[in-house]
Image (cartoon, rainbow, N blue to C red):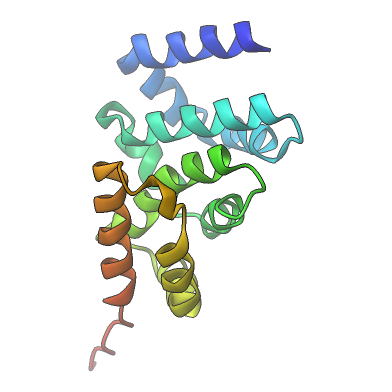
Length: 161
């Protein structure tokens, strides 16, 4: 399994343009199967799959794939559940995918609804999330940004017709 993940990571992160096109074209098939990797009981598979997902989502070549992924409420719910995984490392990797949902300035209404519904719980959770990483400036800054961003979320004003 470890050799597969190394080969998978190399393929997806070295041949970025071709892989981005492939992922975009086959999105539905790939991500239905990929979700199984994120839900597995196998720690190594889950952690490596989550880490790779975060890398893929943050790579500009995969912009279309990222937008599709972060537009699906079931993916946000999965990341919110993985933030509470028993493994701190899996929580940490889930954080890096979760932040993409929150940082998206053009959230679809279902995503915004979930974040608003859980707004106070998310803020409370993030305030106590992995506080022992205080020496990690980047993580601390990202967490602070997310808390502020979630706190500032509001329902859009109804438009008059």
